[in-house]
Length: 246
Image 1 (cartoon, rainbow, N blue to C red):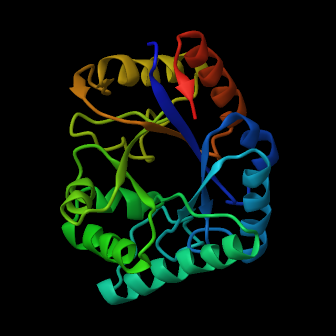
Image 2 (cartoon, rainbow, N blue to C red; image 1 turned 45 degrees about the horizontal axis):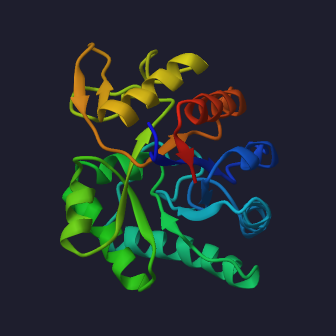
């Protein structure tokens, strides 16, 4: 695995309070910006930590639904969704400006992320927001998804993302959180899951199939109860295999 470089990202600023423990071990972060969690104060705290540890900063906009933590689709017009996403990102941009930091990427959260992977209407809203920002930022997207294809068509730079702590269906969608096998809890299983994606460009799905997948950034959810141990173990083993993380 010599000369292989990947990114490890984590969703932060979501009220868990473990940012200071996670930040030294990751290379990029996705900061909740008010839709499903977060406030100007929490954004500022996470930005300062990211600067301290030289971690790339991303916006993590969501359906505006704190009650359900952004994990349920919200029935709203494209105009309203556009305005909400744009407002969330602009709030983080204001914090970044005051802290003399820059935005590296955008990664939708939860139901918004999952829906954009398959729904062209929702994906188009996110792409239009990206275009309106007129900033050299990347969009974190799942491989072989509607939003990935649409972003490329619109000359938006993308980074393919996969999930280290989530199981996959054969169509490369994530197993629903309503299912018992949606989340991977064992640290060694997380490493094997990620290493297969890095070394073979394949993911082992819940039915045992191995499906092609490409990813340059891998997410572990910050609200995973074992997030810190999962990341430490993953990082250590990847480095031992010659994989660089940056």
